[in-house]
Length: 204
Image (cartoon, rainbow, N blue to C red; front, side):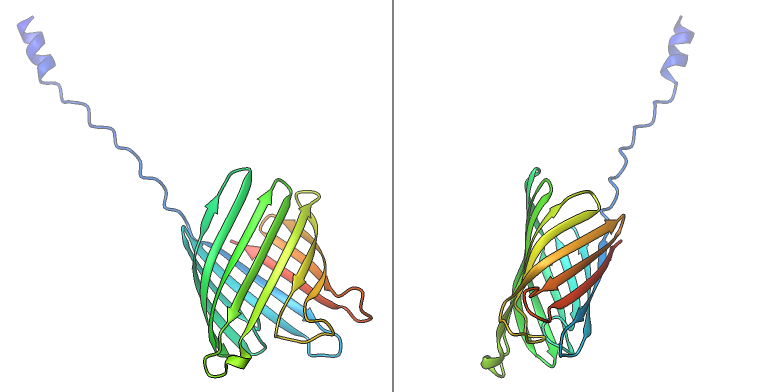
């Protein structure tokens, strides 16, 4: 018995269990390209690239605030709720090119089941000529009929091009498949020559 007890006492202790480290939260990227078809004016494209990591939001745009104008952005991501979800990203941007300045703004959305309200807006401040400062906004209201089809209403207040109305309004039809999505926007459908925006995007 003494020998058995001694042998048992000399058995090596089981190694401590290691707790696996949680997987690092990956970056999330998106690329969107808007093609503007404008009656009696120059058609153009506006690419937007975003990168998000936890609270950090980074963004680069071109032909967004104005033609031949780029902008770089940084912001902080906030999110509240589970069924009724409110997302808010305050941002600050540097605008350069045909228009030069700084631009505080925010991107926000409120979603519940198949309904979503969203807005992207900013105020571009041009220090050298305050008369050129302006407000930009793009609000949307959408309803997802299926997982891949959505319909909605949209408005836009922009300086990149001019139309017969100061605030453009219209409708949208969007489809999506996995990481891809495509949306057609029709602004001012009541006018003889509406403006059409064709948007293609991918998330990765």
